[in-house]
Length: 155
Image 1 (tube, helix red, strand yellow):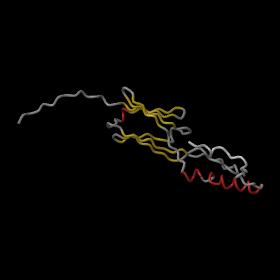
Image 2: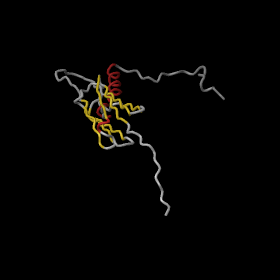
Image 3: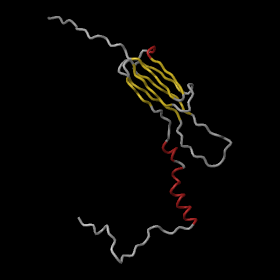
Image 4: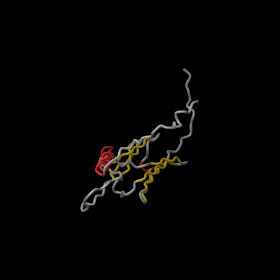
């Protein structure tokens, strides 16, 4: 392996690659670099999507969703056969009296997450609670029926 390209040769004059910028040029450089950040949240369509953990327990499945900043009236949990759906909206709070530049990094918007189960969900088998921005939904597993043999007729 030759490494001669990594070691600078003697007598070679080095030049800097960074051009000298005036104050106006420096400002223009940063305006060009940072100009895309003002439109980034709308361009990326930053929407709120709650993070959900699903845990299987002996007698139930537990879904835990993070819904920070929401009231219990801002979302709903619905059941349709084997589908559990979490739907709602996280609204953006704006101060109308403030003027000037504002940067919004928090996500907001409508959301809908659905979870399909391996069995049909009985409405009375679902328990939901909401505390400090965390929704916990427990869906009881159906009772397992004993396997039984089926008589076969010889024809």
